[in-house]
Amino acid sequence: MNKYTKFKLVGELETSISGKLLYLILLDVIDQENEIVIPQKRISEALGISKGTVSRNLRRLSRRGYIDIIPTFNEYGGRMPNKYYVREG
Image 1 (cartoon, rainbow, N blue to C red):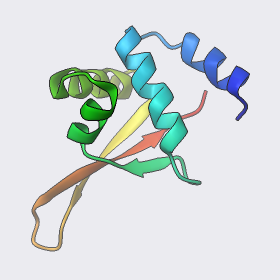
Image 2 (image 1 turned 90 degrees about the vertical axis):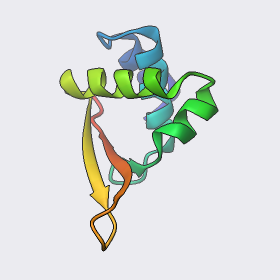
Image 3 (image 1 turned 180 degrees about the horizontal axis):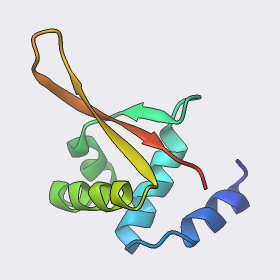
Image 4 (image 1 turned 90 degrees about the horizontal axis):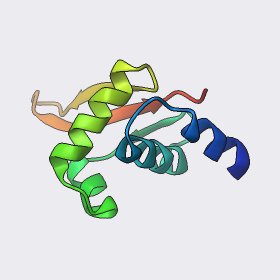
């Protein structure tokens, strides 16, 4: 996806400025399958916003169908960072 298309897509999202920034960052770091496994704390540190703001905006993006949040677990059933599937358009 070229930069113009990416910025146009993000500009049309019905979410907060923080949500748009978060979505744009996710678009930049997803793999070939449009997925990434990343801790919310790492996102909050990279963007300079609170973990609560990250969590709230990820939930909003998910509710609006822009991303899927997939919980992940280790072999003992312990929680691991979520996997995020980013829908493009």
